[in-house]
Image 1 (cartoon, rainbow, N blue to C red):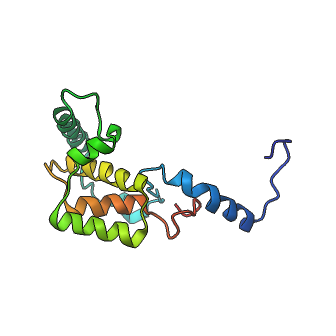
Image 2: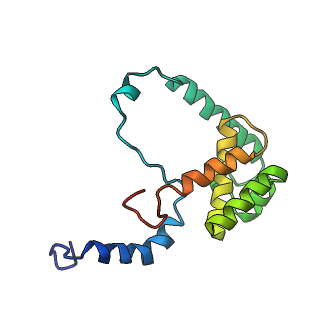
Length: 157
């Protein structure tokens, strides 16, 4: 609906042009873009890989890691890290840095996205109980950020 309460008569091309202009800045602020597809019958009837209790225990352990990491600071969660805290708590090197550098160069990742990927990678590492961020954590974080064929196509995300 438009401001006058009338329906929108924009074409699909008009909507896509709008989202390409506006959506990029908006989507750059969204850390995780995870499509939720309807599961197939075989997925629904298959065995459970991890129980809800096991997942809850992993999340509690990750929260404890965050509490230890940020003790004595105003930061409570990985999502609350600013650029200086990211430099301190999300340092990467070697193979991990090479994987991250490759992703940044190939995908044209913004500064905001760069820091967001490191925050998400730190959380993924915490959920696995890892003390440091590995290349697999970086690549998973990049994947969560770049869902969809076109990162500015909000309809495929």
